[in-house]
Image (cartoon, rainbow, N blue to C red; front, side, top):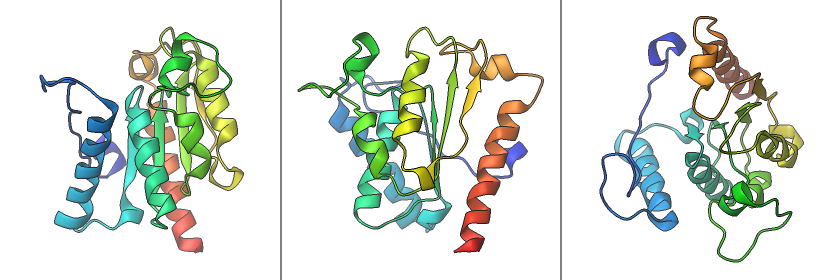
Length: 188
C-alpha cells in the first residue's frame, strides 16, 4: 500500500490488543493514538497537515477521538479514513438513536466536529458493524469535509481488501482521497 500510494505508513498496537497483553480500555487506546501522533509530529517533525489518520472498526473510534481533539485545538490534520466505522460501541448491538451513559468510541458524537476531509469505506454486507453505521456517520460529517464514501458491494467486516483484490479499486480510491487532500491544500 505504501509503495502503491507513494506514502509513508506508521502502525501500532493499542494497549490490550494485538501483541499487547494488557487489559484493553478506551482511555488507553486514546493515550496510544496521542503518543503515536506526538511521535510523528514532535519526534519525526511531520507537519499535522501531512498526517492522515486511518482507522478500521474499533480503530475508527480512536481516529475520531484524536481528529476531534485536534480540531478543537485549531490543529488541522490532512484527513481521516474510516474503514468499517461504528457509530458507537453500544450501537453495534442496539439500535439507539442517542448516546447512552457508559458508551464507548462514540464516533457519532465526534465526527461533526472534525475539521478535515473524511473518507468512509464500508462493506454493504458487514456482519459485525452494520452498514447503516457508515451511512449515518457520513451524513453526520460537516458538508465541507465530506468526501464521497466507498460502499463496497457485498463485502463484510473482514474482507473488504479481499473483495477488492485484483481490481486495485481500494488502492485507487485511497489514492484519489490523498490527491483530493493535496488539491485542497493547494487551494488554501
